[in-house]
Image 1 (cartoon, helix red, strand yellow):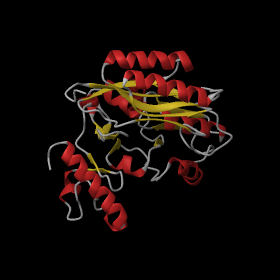
Image 2 (cartoon, one colour):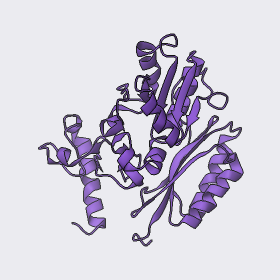
Image 3 (cartoon, helix red, strand yellow):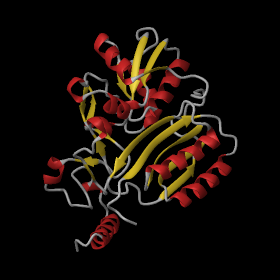
Length: 301
């Protein structure tokens, strides 16, 4: 494979009733392999979610057309970007109970979600409503590297903690209007469904998520501060969806910047200050062996 090529990356999701998860999983695997598509997809009764890459736009278009055949692309959130190196090493298509785990059985995004706002509508709403609660539904390590100015950080480590944050800090009586956002739209779509089920009257969410905002809104007028974490080897993206400045710690999976890499605890491919104290001898050996192997493959060692 020619690694100098530009890979097409597609982040996608759709909340839709899927009757036979297993049959869809098999069909997607077979098609992806014929097109040399890599990445990760989750398949649940409530829909499909994931990020995939293909060696050409034609191959990606063929894969997306196949997904359209199986689940319908109407209302699907679909965002394209590119990568110089293949961002995924393998293909994973997994069956899950939920495509984004909230563990709230009364929530059904296939039936009820909040009001979508385009990036421009979102931008104007934030400027016009400075006192409205605007909630970042992502996890703490994602918020740490970038968020909207004056957004509320729930300080959640996992999305299942979101309902607890809402019950402690918001109420349908006091907060008639709330807005929320996430990376690509999927978490806040489910969060908006949850809040409507809990009795909140006006719930808004950013259609296409942060990535669509960074793509559509010029940097000089943007209300976004920092970079946006993404769940592949690009680690972070900035305005215009250009690759950001963060790298990835293989010890804990968290994003790291130049300051983190200058810390005395940092070891390339092994650990950073966040995870060095939790590194067992067994994990250190596994990470060291992996890092040595990758260096050898890349002609560094």
